[in-house]
Structures are given as structure tokens and as C-alpha cells.
Length: 112
Image (cartoon, rainbow, N blue to C red; front, side, top):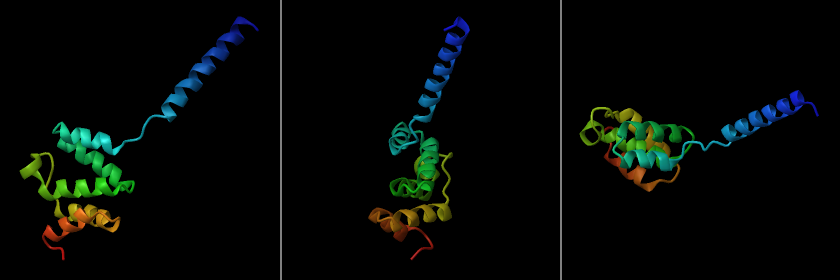
């Protein structure tokens, strides 16, 4: 095998390994959102919870709804109080069987 061919094979192998590593990168998990929350990175945790909730994660939807229901009083100025958005996330979580989300919906203004 010529030196040039050997180099091409090594380079191609390195590209495949890099691509495989990139493809197997872990998706965002609830643990990352919890970690941000426990570090008091509330804006980041809300973003992560909402991303997970859009993928169907009921726990993340419940947590996002709760945070949006509380807003800046509990989480500072970077987390808004957004009752319609909170309600939507809590309804998603409740429909998925999260009983605490159903309880929170009962506390949300304008819901029955």
C-alpha cells in the first residue's frame, strides 16, 4: 500500500470515528435540566424543561408549567410569569398522568 493511500485510509477512519462520536452524543436529558435548576440556573433549566416537554416528557412539562406559574417571585426576573404557557404545559403533563400537574391546574387562575 502506498504512503498516500495509507494516509487517505487513516484520514477517512478518523472522520468516521469523529462522525460516530458526534452521532452518539447524548440528547438533552431531564437530569441536565434538574442540574441547572439545582444550581439556581433557572432560565436555563426552564429552557431545557420546555425543550424536553416539546418532545413529550411529562415531568418536564409539569416542571416548566410550575416555573412559569411562579415566575419571577420564585425564580427571578429571567423567568416570566406566563399563565397561558404554564397552563398549556400543565395540561400536557396532566393528560400524561402527572397528578401533581392536575393539582397545579386547579390552582392556576382561570382554569376549572
